[in-house]
Image (cartoon, rainbow, N blue to C red; front, side, top):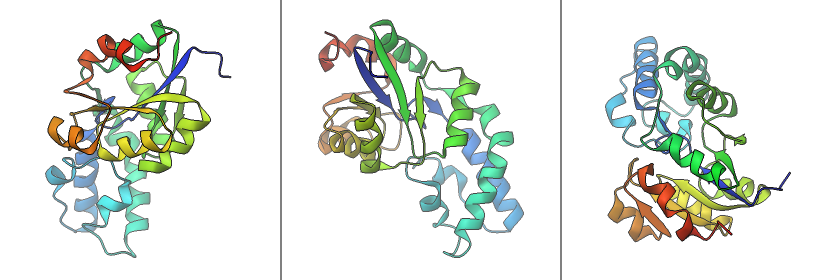
Length: 206
């Protein structure tokens, strides 16, 4: 199972996949159905945490579980078809695999929709682990012996720390380069385009 030279973990939303349009469209549909105002443009600027946390901004605590379930019913038909790869995502994954590495995705997105998204984008991923957030992701990273974790959120830096892995932060989500650097990421990049050139710096290639 662990016969690869190394394993690199990646976050999904706003790291490998641009899900803003799709998530915004599902939130708009949810708003129309429920009659509850949701500022979807604001919501998609803070992607990363579990869905229930975002929906709690708009719905009462007792409504949130129902709205999470409905969001997920709508997701495959509305969001997945308009999801696009982030700039550099395909080449970043290829760089890991071409140098003998294994790629896993560890995400807060639920397992089914994470897998659907990766299949739709045809991303070369060895394993997907969903429904984990921030330091919780460390469990999956340790299980799969990931030595690097790449993400766009400070929660992803927490994930890497929890697994004693190197944290690579890309400023393609809610945090800019300065904020990610201040939080203590080991390597901060503007996006994934330069990631292949930095693999050597991460000490994973023997």
